[in-house]
Structures are given as structure tokens and as C-alpha cells.
Image 1 (cartoon, protein in one colour):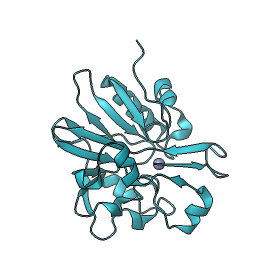
Image 2 (cartoon, rainbow, N blue to C red):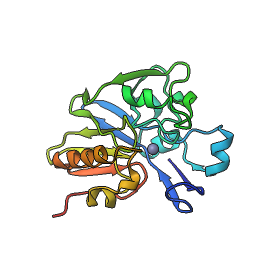
Image 3 (cartoon, rainbow, N blue to C red):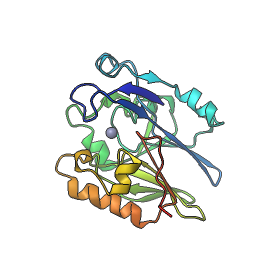
Length: 216
Ligand SMILES: [Zn+2]
């Protein structure tokens, strides 16, 4: 959805950042996981100088269009995950209540991007089946109300882990404490352990084009 260079002060300062969203089609439902980085915020535009792929262009690549989307999921509410919620008025946008509360903290996100006029916020608490075979998993770690999305398949769940871990390698290693939210290191490790205990067939991440698969 976007690439940019991590600015000074960012944990990955100087390196290339990629931002991914995920499209899920299952049992007749089409679900978009995250809406990418918003634009029009002068501070962020200047800091990150993001090179964006529009949602519409990304959906075309996936053989879909905005009109196909039944449900939007925000894994969490940082500015690079909920920045285009405004493109989906009238469609339920699922987020965790705890994340919605956390997003009011100073410098957490661009608050106005979460629920501009017409956006239907649908708050949930904990795990929640949102469509047949599709479940939101409460995976706090990177943020207080982070969630992942699991799709049942015959070979095990396929999971949009989002920013549960920054990379597939970090997930494989069981975690990197630098990626946990302040004071949440134990919860972060527990969320990764829990996801692995589900024996996923594949896990995808917000900032890594590599997917995780169990070693043979
Ligand atoms: Zn984030």
C-alpha cells in the first residue's frame, strides 16, 4: 500500500518501510484488513514522504473493487493502518474497544482518520467471529488493542497477523521486546505464543512481504 523511509527516532530509522493491507474472500464475504496510510497530514507527509499505492489500485490488482467490500477490519489504529477508513462509509469497520480507547492518547495516531463522517465503527471486545470461518483474534502487544484475523482452511488457520510481529523472522523467533508496547512485553510474548499454538498454516504481517509458514 505504501513505502517510505523510517525517519530519525523511529526504531527502524533509515530503513525502508513497507505497509501492507490484506483482502480476504471467504464464504461469500469480502473483508479488507487495514486501510493503509492516510494522506493530507502535513507533519506525516513531510516526515515519511510515503510513496502510496491507492486502495483502488491495490484492489484492482487483487481483482476487486471498493464496492465488493463487506467488512473493514482495523488491526490497530496507528496512522498507517486506518488512514483510509473514510473511503468505506456505511460499511462496518471492526476494531477493538481497547484500541479505540487507546487511540485517544496523545501522539497515538491521527484521530480524525479513524471515524470520519459516515464511517460505521463496530467495536468488539476480545475474540469475535465476524463471518463464517473468519475470526478476529485479540492479540495485544504492539498496541493495547491490537487484533489479528484468522481464516479457517483445511490446512489450518491462515492469519493476517498484522503488526503482531514486525517481521516473519521476529514471529519465528518468538518475539523481539523492542516491538512491544510500553510495559506490555509479557503480553506481547503471550500473544505470539497463542497465535503459534493455533498451528497456523500461514501468517502475514503489516510491514514484511515475507509470510511465515511452519518449518517442515
Ligand atoms: Zn502500528
